[in-house]
Image: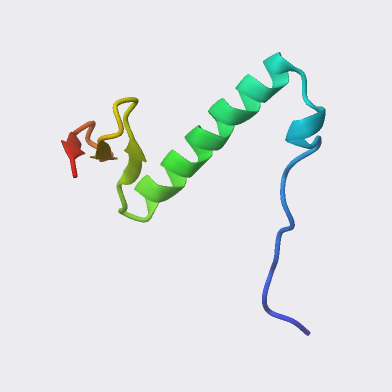
Length: 66
């Protein structure tokens, strides 16, 4: 018996087939899932601001320029 559990995606519809509203909601939920996961393992969420500056966001709300 295999003790390794695997999960193959959670998408119901491909992004290319989504209308604008569905695509916005999908992007928002994807961001929230990534953020929650990273914080749960003690890692910051790292991303680029609109001006191109890389930043790290921490669970306590702190945002640091990198």
